[in-house]
Length: 449
Ligand SMILES: *Cc1c(COP(=O)(O)O)cnc(C)c1O
Image (tube, rainbow, N blue to C red; front, side):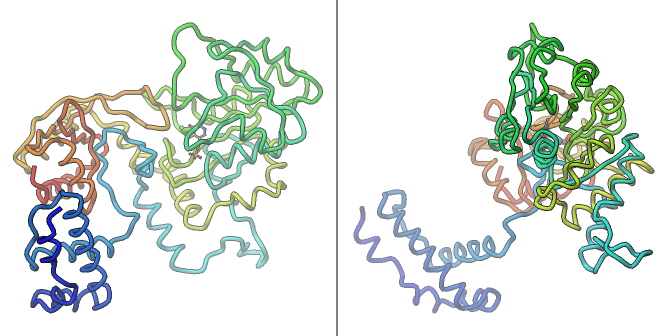
């Protein structure tokens, strides 16, 4: 440690007396500036003490550092990210971007009073979800529908309302963790039901469910394997087979299909909600922000007899949707009915490799560095893990290394998140819209690559 360096560290007052401090004080205020200068000097002191700093910056440089601290503090924690990861539905990046119509609906409802729980023609208390329920019924053919806070809440509510006090049968191949520690066995217990595991990890047959069926059985649960795959020597019972087994004992089939596909889609091997219902599920649950392309939400569809107990369950209030999400969900469902091509995630799914290549080339032409490479993009991190798409990226080989450049891009505004492969930083364009290319190029331009 260099004691003379420590002695030469300027005092907070000396830095504040510098001419450059005046302008910063005017835009950020005296007290925040003082705090930022103190923090910057503390960092320098720590750097000298741990040996990582061998020379002191000028007071001007110190003030510039304090200014960048102040700018960072001023920007919101939750902010825009350019998703160059090559994963369209990235759970950590907030899944589906919303359609313009959904954003407009949220802005309108958020800025004003609404008929959230008010029946305007009757002038009395109304239902929060009546609007989305009608759309969901029309889009899926379900007899009844309900919407809650997210997919996990939909399963929790369904199992508590339909399985509580009885037994829920699940295949050992479907006792999954969905993410963030949310595990199906725990959810079943939380709902007050007894878990009955049947079959083996790789194979479960309809007869396994039939053998476990008893008068206490309330639900046969089918969980779609959305974030992993069991390949090879495998077997699972279909919803139709479960339905046949359940009927003999008056039990219900609940199917958690995860990603919420409404229309059959070329190249997306996921069950649609309508299919799950038509093949015999009494209740189907899914997320609103995966393939449906809406806000965070949990959708519940099924027969009136299966949905009604959920409406009356006390948990419903704890997992209800707020007005902003409800507005975005209703607008997204209207688009599914009237103009599905306006839903960003659906547009993304239909992009052709040529179009993606041209977009990557446009990016490269603007930034003037990097190589065009073909990549494997994915539909979703938490949904459809193995459904790859051909895509294109600009591969950067930064002098300072891919990790340093990736960090600098993540710290920018807007932040850019790419992916590192073979010590190159790949910027995949599958989840970057045409309109975002210029913004992305500017963000890259602000960082020394
Ligand atoms: C994503 C998913 C969930 C959880 O939904 P959230 O909306 O994230 O709570 C549950 N089950 C399956 C099969 C999923 O894919």
